[in-house]
Length: 255
Length: 295
Image 1 (tube, rainbow over the protein chains, first blue to last red):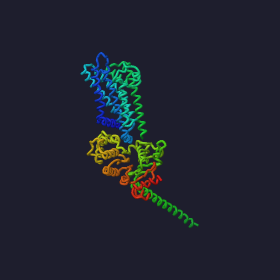
Image 2: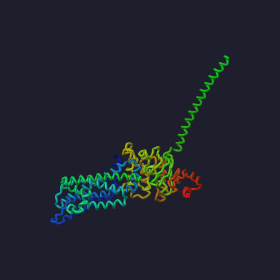
Image 3: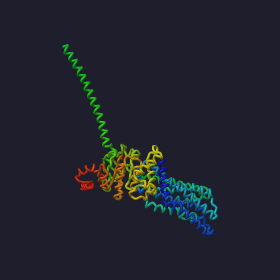
Image 4: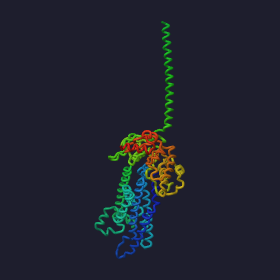
């Protein structure tokens, strides 16, 4: 346990001193929140388009922000592998669980902090634009996006284990773009319908977004929140299992 | 007749006494022999050191390629043993097997009597490794890197926070890292990074240290400074060094092994190697052995 916490502390320190982390994990989602709110103000009310309304946008941006947590997980793991830092640690009394939890815990802490910052920014924007948003909904959403955070962290662990420090960020960028598109963060997939919506429904991203949005609206119906939460949690469990398997296989292979 | 019987009886008694005397003398000699053997064995171990590292017919295969081929070798406690060889000779693979990073395909590797496969956790507590890459946390300061490794490597049951702090301070002092202790390690020069890397290998207080090409890419001055650190370490630890720099092996090693194509082809002190090959200087010895092997 002590070794897990020491490795967690080291990873937190390592990430907290990387300026890019602040830019991508905190500043960029906030900028997107502001830009999309400005876009929303520019859309005529008659258009009936509410995808960029702050209660929809906040949940979407929380998921969008988590894709960057995935990116930084992958960068951290792949850099540790490429610099032989992990090889050094393999020769110490650290166990497999120390490595896995040591990577997951700091990333989860960052994801929660990120959601809190986005919730606070959403509240400010709602105040400025004069739209009422549920404060308990926003606070609850910080908790209900934890399964999706674990899902993205698991993806980051997988990419960081499989690819080197040059390839992993590139692959993650594809997931950042694809995930935000197929997660219907910036467009209304349900109303768009057709094959795009069918593809979206086959992947877990849209369920992550739906669960966050439903929580912010305090809509806990089975059809909106229940199913989405269930799919997100299942995706998190499957991906985390795959990530642990992948990381430990790579550990053995590198030896 | 009576006299004769008396004489026989006297002889028997005398013989019995003699036997007892012989037995006593024999027993005394035996005790002296056992005592001397024990004392001399202890002295000999003291002088030569016990075997800290033992490799018995160790082989490592990656698919069809044999990286290490039936290597047998012993390294005594307190010895600095250099493994020399061209790229791909099997030096790093040998080190990896000794510090539990990879399992031998055949044979047995032991550190201080512990099998590297069956008793990996005991072995891990005994070894420290400085890899070819510096393997440091680049965004952490020198002090944070050392503290992190100390917390990971030292037994928490035996070392409280104060003990760990004291140990970190001692390592910072002995490696002359005081002036850069608050500097992020990624911003240090190559020489400082190498020094930190070795300090991180030593901080767990290991009995055996593996230095895999520790001066790779350093300028002459930085290399000389690092040699000084290695000489200091040599005092109370067993060190296995791999290097491509012949003068480094010549300068630091007690014994040297030359590896070619996964096999150890020659082992000994520098004078012994010179005598075996009839060459002068390690570079000439190495070239002569490598060329003879190729031919």
